[in-house]
Amino acid sequence: ISSTMTNETNEDHPCPTKGTISQPFDPSTILPSNNKSPAPQPNRAATNSALDALLQNSLRPTPCDVHGSGPLLLSDIPANCRTISNESRGVILGIDEAGRGPVLGPMTYAAAFWNPDCSAGSIPTGFNDSKQLSAEKRASLFKKMRSSEFIGFVLRVLHASEISRNMLRRAPYNLNAMSHDAAIEMIRAVLDAGVKIDTAYIDTVGNPDSYRRRLEGLFEGRGITFIVETKADAKYAPCSAASVVAKESRDTMMANWKWTETPNYVPQNSDKFGSGYPSDPKCKAWLESNINVDVPFGFPDFVRFSWAPAKNALKEGADKSGPIVRWEADEDDESGGKQSSLDSFVVVKKGGGNKGRTRGNMEELRRKKPRLGIFNELGLSKVTKFVEAID
Image (cartoon, rainbow, N blue to C red):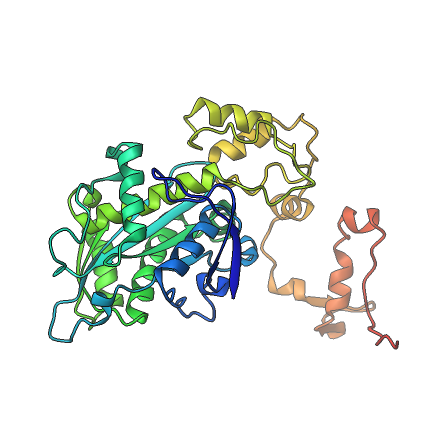
C-alpha cells in the first residue's frame, strides 16, 4: 500500500509540513490485530513515512477511538540487530514516555535499541533525559535517529480517547497499568520481529522492584536483564534515546493536531492550548473557552475526560449551553437500593397462601418496576417479535 502524504522537511526538524511526497508503507502495520504484534517496517523510507503519518495525524486509526489498543509503530530492524547470533548478548533497549500528566493530547511511549557492538560514531552522543535537552538538541538527535541505519525504535501512541475510555470503565484501567502494558507491547513487538534483547533499561512507573519482577515473569526464558529505575532516562543512553523519540513525537503531534470532529466542530483558540498540562495558564484558558462548544459531548476527543480538571471544568461550566443528563437508572439504584431477597423472586398468585406460589414468572417481576422516563418520552416500546424483511 502506498500512502501519499503532505511532506516538506527542513534541516532542524525532520517532520513534514508542506508539499507532497509518496512513500510506501502499509497503514495496517501500525495497529495490533488478533493480539499479534505489528510487523516491522520493511525499510527506513517506509519507517519515516509511517512515522510522519502518525505525527501529522494524517493517519489516525479510527479503531483506537472506539475500542482496543491504539497505534504501535515498529521501525525497520537494523541489519546488525537482525544478524545477532545465539551466542552473542543481543541488543540493548530503552523505554520511556512523554505526556503522562497533561489533560490534553496523547501520551507517547517509545523504545530505542541498537547492537552494543556498533562501532564508535555509529550511535549519536549527547543523549539525556529529553526534558533536560534544549528543543534544538532534542530535534537534532531525533533527526539523526530517524536517518540512522544502526538504531531501531518503537512508538506507541495512547490517544486521549483511549486513556479516557480505559480510566472511565466501571472497573478503571489506570494509567500505571496502561503504561506497563505499553512497555510490554513494545518489548514483545521487538522480540516477535526476531530481535534478541540482552538488556532493557526502563524508566519506572510505580514501584521499580514490582515492575521489574512482573517483566521478568512475563519474559522468563528470554534471557533479558531488566533494569528498572527512577530517572533511568538520565542514566542509560538507550532509555535517553527512547525519551527523545517519545517527547519529539508528542510535541509534533500536538503542533500538527487535526480535529476529528471537523467540519461540525470548530474549537475556540484551536491552537492556543499551550503544553496541555493543567497548570499551564494557556491550557486552563483553552478548557474554559471550549466547554460545551462541541455540544452535546462537552469537549473534543483531544481532551482526557477522565482527568479531574476536565471533569471539574464541565461541572463548573454547566451553564454554557451544555445538556443536563439525568441518570435515572443510577438514581434508582442509589435511592431504592436494597439487595433483593430470595423471596422477591417468588410470585404469590391470588387466592393464595404458600400453595399459590410459582417460580420463574420473570415477566410479572419486570412489570413491578416502572419504566424509566426516557422510554416514554421517546415513545419507545418493547420489541417482542422480529420479522424478516423481504426486498
